[in-house]
Image (spheres, rainbow, N blue to C red):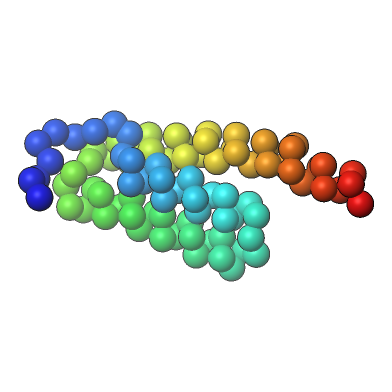
Length: 88
């Protein structure tokens, strides 16, 4: 592998891990959701620690994940959860 020669905004690792963690936090029992969010935060911090991202990259990744997971959650609630309640 080659070391990264430039920084990237937003942090993809942070965005991906927080997107999944925030969905878990909203949809699973809190003990799993909190664990997932803590792990996502550690992934974001690790990107800073190893020097492949600036803090703004990680923060940007978090906000991308917050937006994307919110959209997915709303769509899921509107089209899947509510329809299954009406069918029973």
